[in-house]
Length: 168
Image (cartoon, rainbow, N blue to C red):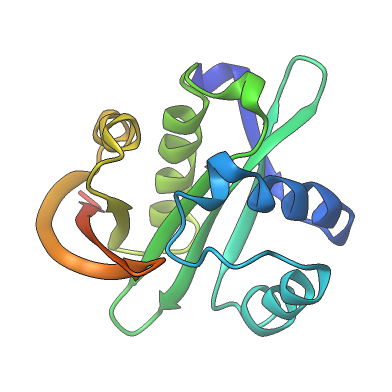
């Protein structure tokens, strides 16, 4: 699948897709931050995170038809300790469960280590999201910690798994 997708930098023209994807139930419920995503919040993300270099966000595109299907990002880029937090969402339902996320993760890991010169890329995932955990493991992430009752979503405490990949 890796050769069937490519990553390109996110542009302001991607805003409508990002908002639609992030507000879909399937994507929203997999994020710690679950409030509705707005144009204003996305524009603020661009201004405070992307434009400052604290985050990098790419759009996942299928090579066949040049179709955008989701997004990957690295946030809270720490140039002192050479690390950042990885995130992904596959917005188009038709692209889920086909290896797109694993392929995108592999490409973003390479980008993080070669282009951003990071040493460590980590992520947090809901412990019950087994499909995502398997995808992350296929891409090279390893489980590092199980965080009991780490976040509270709609009044219910949820366990999280901390995963990371370290440059060779």
